[in-house]
Length: 229
Image (cartoon, rainbow, N blue to C red; front, side, top):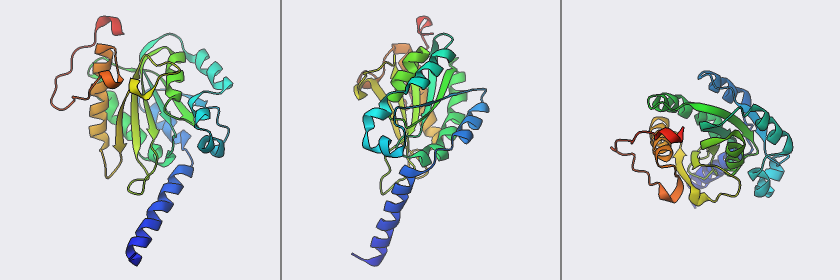
């Protein structure tokens, strides 16, 4: 193997490992959400540390008891949409891109009368953790922004997962995903456009997952039904 190729591979591998173990900048995320008047609840999964999180994916899919109680105390009624920002497998991706996506997403949703009713920032998070968070908060739909598994081509890729009627035990077939959000992939503006389209359509049709195909390109979104709020 040529020296240049070997060095590029070694650098990419190191960046991927660093992304997995990067510190989740929770204060910056909370401060970023405050720009939009959103006060998130900080919660944790049952994974006690990064080692547990990587070895036991199941622990990252359920909230610890203290977080369950905290969310229940902040519920205050159902809402159309809840936002969850979780560290996932690349906290570096969340630190770099999550607030930028939210900044583009909020006005798109507001134009259709949709606002973020509840928000949570979750550590030790797997995608399914959002289902329990959304169920406790009484959200009709959740949008979860989470760091994706780093690869050699992108160590800071963010994913957005949308779930209608979130509840514990849902499978991935019940979610829509907008993935590969990073500087050399899907831009934050385009990602926000797709997410907003899926939120509108998901609330209007009361579905997400395999039953909701992303047809956001050039389509006119239908209005939210009155009984979906």
